[in-house]
Amino acid sequence: MSSNDYEPKIVVFACNWCTYAAVDLAGTSRMQYPPNVRVIRVMCSGRIDPQFVLAAFEQGADGVIVAGCHPPSDCHYISGNIKALRRYSLFRRLLEELGIEKERFRLEWISASEANKWVQVVNEMVRDLKRLGPVKLEVEAV
Amino acid sequence: MSIRPKVAFYWCASCGGCEEAVVDLGEKILDVVNLVDIVFWPVAMDFKIPDIEAMPDDSITVSFINGGVRLSEHEKIVKLLRRKSMFVVAYGACACWGGIPGLANNYRREEILERAYITTPTTVNPEKIIPSQTRPVEINGAKIDLPEFLPSLKPLDEVITVDYYVPGCPPTPEVTWEAINILLSGKLPSKGSVIGASNKSLCNECPLNDTKPENVLIKEFKRVVHFVPDPNQCLLVQGLPCLGPVTRGGCSALCIKANMPCTGCFGPLDNIHDYGGKAISFLGSILDLEDEEQIRKEISKLPDILGLIYKYSLPKSGLRNILRSVRK
Image 1: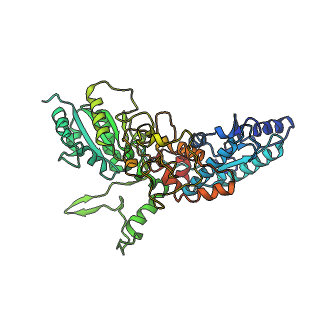
Image 2: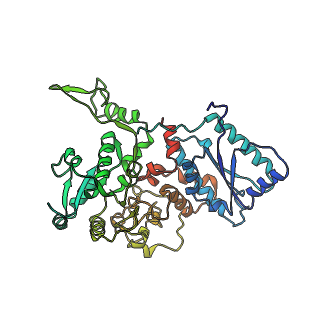
Image 3: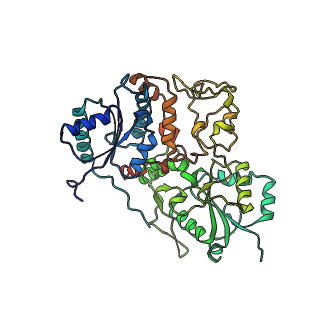
């Protein structure tokens, strides 16, 4: 596969109240953006266990976006987004220590009206991941 | 010919502590020896690989294998033991999830060899000789070569099928004794189970559990180098990142009794998919800060997140595919 044909797979965990509504808005507004994202709706960004993100990478995702309501006070459940902020601050440090490119993971705050921001985030991430190229696995000796 | 169950022990990439743990059974080991025939135990007894090769398939009742698979020799012998054994037990954290030698998966093979054989301050190696499989040495007409140092360390179950897991670094004598009894009793749990340990978190058996509030919230992460913890209060409340809440119990809280936080050597509970992910989830929830800058500052006080949450299970991390790719 030449690098031009490479289409990265991006798993998105989006909260029901803000980001998923923004994704919906982008759709109903007929905004155009790359089809590389698979959006999974969860009730709150505070429900997105880092294990979900790790499982996405384990199963072949090239990048993961965790997205929720703007801190400090947009969260439908008061503080779920703050919990996500703390968890994914730790997660980013982990990626840094492992030397994994920071472009592979994004934590974004996208409100229900920010369809434009959603489109921009997806565009940027697809561009960054295409630049990184596919995950090259070592050839296993049998 | 004896009809007693045959048992084999083998070590791969490990420190030898697991072998020590078997001997730590003390006088009970004499009971074990009365009940079984030990047919292979390189660290303690003189059996050779051809002895095992000569045995019929499935003739060893159980093989206890500790350590992760890092050399081509480990791979060869564990595959041989798998063929000859009815049951294989991954004994200790390294065999279960990679353990401390598994942290080396954060480095390329070449980097590890260079560090170990050339750049360590105590090494004198002016000719820069690195063990290599491609340079066999001839001694008295016999060609001798070294096993290959594989690209990464693999937990045992990524090389062969593992029937049971005994966790711990090392497994305590109590856990070892319990596991041996379960195997000898014939009342075997379903394959793939962890045996000998508990399926409740460490907090459940921790003597400080009564001092742990319903909702632990801390403003800062501390380290044991900063202060002497109060031995009568939950270490989490004191700000130490103790991994007890996400770690399998069974060790009877040995480290906590010594005033040290749990580092997670008994590994994940049955319902946890990725130990490091769960640990991040839990550490994130107890940190009682709301401001992004403050959170970043507090987290930067933890010097080694990787070593904190994946001390025993980096090779099992969901990030392993990407990590292999980056390390290439």
